[in-house]
Amino acid sequence: MRKIVLYIAASLDGYIARPNGDTSWLEEEKYTLEGEDFGYSDFLKSIDTTLMGHSTYQVILAFGTPFPYAGKKNYVFSRTSHLDTEHVKFIQKDVVSFVQQLKQQQGQNIWLIGGSQINTLLHNAGLIDEVLLTYIPVILGSGIPRLAPRRGH
Ligand SMILES: NC(=O)c1ccc[n+]([C@@H]2O[C@H](COP(=O)([O-])OP(=O)(O)OC[C@H]3O[C@@H](n4cnc5c(N)ncnc54)[C@H](OP(=O)(O)O)[C@@H]3O)[C@@H](O)[C@H]2O)c1
Image (cartoon, rainbow, N blue to C red; front, side, top):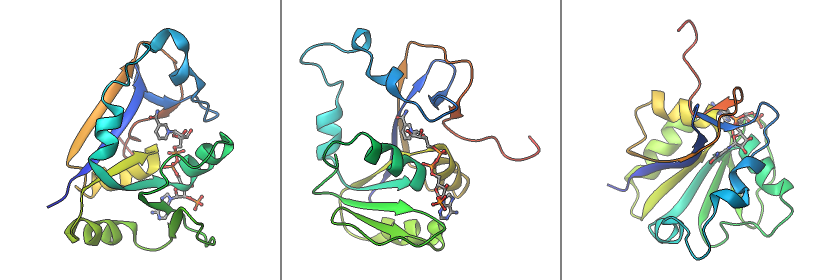
């Protein structure tokens, strides 16, 4: 069966974005090496589908660049209805059973892009098969965690 792979970058203290959603710390030049993509292009070839929450999708749109996952099947989860676009299909209802069905279909692996809410939902449903986590050597102190703690814990 195809796998769901959470491929994500986090700060050393486990945040995927600052409290306001800012992720510019991921792109700082001091954390890049010319000619080195740290396995990203190979990973991209191994997947044919992406999953993301609406907030993550909005952050990607705000970059103002061409949609980065054109050519893949891209699903965006939202509780409200939106028109599908050339690149993405919105999924409004029953995310967990949608993803369970997706896993049963033929295809390459599925990239769970994030963010925290969707990671947590799919983790709690036991649907994440692999985690590829890149730590960026920065401490943010606060922000949006990779996974949200369960209520009461
Ligand atoms: N560091 C990294 O590699 C990385 C990777 C991914 C994301 N991020 C960052 O993570 C941040 C976003 O994370 P987040 O946790 O705030 O948001 P998110 O998980 O990306 O999206 C949350 C949204 O998903 C929808 N949603 C949540 N539960 C749902 C359900 N049960 N059914 C249907 N829709 C549901 C809701 O959309 P509606 O409000 O439309 O209903 C909700 O507001 C952004 O700043 C992004 O840049 C970082």
